[in-house]
Structures are given as structure tokens and as C-alpha cells.
Length: 175
Ligand code: IMP
Ligand code: MG
Image 1 (cartoon, rainbow, N blue to C red):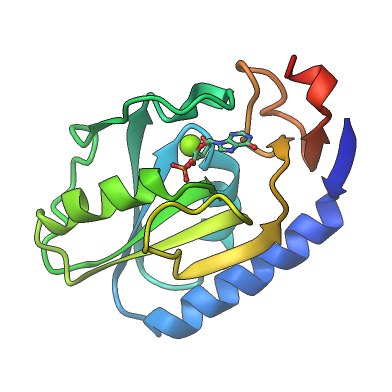
Image 2 (tube, rainbow, N blue to C red; image 1 turned 180 degrees about the vertical axis):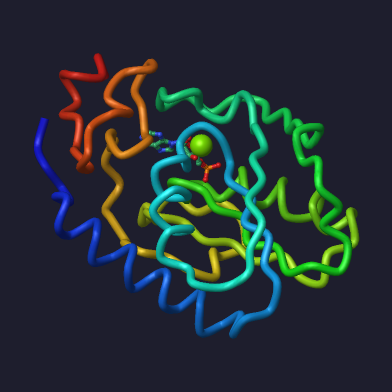
């Protein structure tokens, strides 16, 4: 396991991300929607840096890779999105943008609930994996196509609790 982004680098990158978000919305009421489980660390840090009116919601997108390299069918569960996002600015927050399939499927579903806008923010964008035309609106870090864990990201439910982002070597993922 090799540290890719240490705690200090993460903090700086998330501060830059928060500043971009703050400037973009300029005080307009914002609903942050975190994609469980991977985004919880980013979401918690981001909301503490955003000095503006906001709501926080969580949704689950099941079946998306499940912490392995294998892609799977994506089933999205919006039932947890309890508050009415109609007319509000929505920022979908996810840990990592790889193929883009997750956000590609989530954005139109949120759009159907009638928000003023739906934008996307991710901690990491993996280079060379994109399969959709959508790009995230806010990106903290671009990384190469390696398997990463920590700061919310898991491999078979392990390593989420690491306070930094580490690269798992191929022998550690059994592939
Ligand atoms: P996408 O739909 O291909 O963009 O995949 C995004 C999701 O796949 C992320 O939210 C993660 O849950 C998972 N994922 C993709 N790459 C990694 C990785 O390197 N480590 C852990 N999870 C990953
Ligand atoms: Mg995820």
C-alpha cells in the first residue's frame, strides 16, 4: 500500500473544492446529496467548510463496483432523499469518478424531482476510464488509473477509515 494523498494534501484539496463551490453558489440555498458510503468523509469535511445555508441528504447507489474492480448493474435508491429538492440547487457529492456511470445515472433521476439545478462534486477523478460524456463540475484531485482506498473508499469493506488516500498494489487486490 502506497500513500497517494496524505492528510495535509487532502485538506488543501478539499479547501480548494469548498471555495469553488462557495463561489459558484454565492449564498443560494444548496442541498448537498452524498452518495453513500464512500462520500461520507468528503461530505463531512465539505459541509464544515461551507459557510452558507445548506441542507444535507444521503442516497445509496447500490451495486456500483462494490469496492472491487468489477463493474455491475447499478440500482439506485432515491427513497432516502426525504426532503423536497424542488427549486433548490443540488450538489451531488461522490468519492470517485471512474467510468462516470454512477453520476450519469444519478443526475437525471435527481433532475426528475424538479431541482433548480443538479451539479456534481467528486474528491477523485480517475484518468482514462471515462465512458460517458458527463464530467463532474467540481473535482478535488485527478489521479491515474490505480485502485485507491481510504478516506471513505473501500476494498471489500476494508480501509474506509484511513485518514489518507492510498494506492492498493495489484497483489493486494488479488488481480
Ligand atoms: P463509476 O461509476 O465508474 O464512475 O464508479 C464510481 C464508483 O466506483 C465510486 O464511487 C466507487 O464506489 C467505485 N470505485 C471506482 N474506483 C474505485 C477505487 O479505486 N477504489 C474504491 N472504489 C472505487
Ligand atoms: Mg461510490
